[in-house]
Image (cartoon, rainbow, N blue to C red; front, side, top):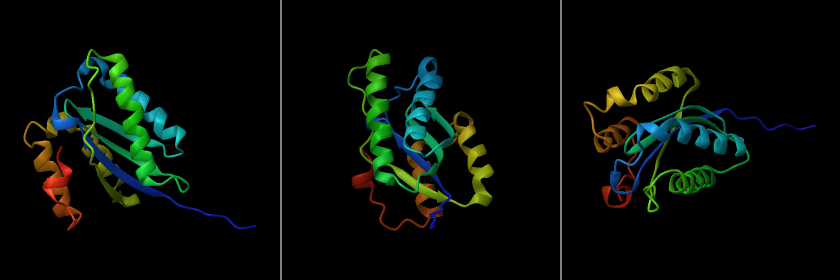
Length: 150
C-alpha cells in the first residue's frame, strides 16, 4: 500500500485593504478563533494566528491535499464575511495579495515567537517595512510593489 507524506510549515501574512486599521482588540480573539476553524476544515492546522489593527500573520501546516491558493482564498473569503457580520463595517475587505513563506521545522519556534510579538514588533516597523524585509530574507525576486499593495 502506498502512502503520501508531507510536513510543510507556512508563514502567511496579508493586510486589510489599503491597510485600514479595522481589526480592533474587541474582536481580535474571536476573529483568530474563526480563522483557526477555517484552517482546520482545510486540513491545514494553524499553530499560531496573531494580528494588529491592519494585518494578520499565521503559521500553519500546509495540507498535502489542498493548494495554498485555495487555503488563502477560503480563509480570506470566510473571515471577510465574518468581519462584515460581526463589526459595524459592511465594507470590510482583505488586500488582494498575500505573502507566504516556507518555514523549516527547525525554525518553527522562532517564527511562532515572532508572530506572538506582533504588537511589540510593529511599534518600530511598519507592515510595508516588514514585507520588504521578508522579500530580502526569503530572496523573493518577483516582488513588485505595484501588485502587492492595494
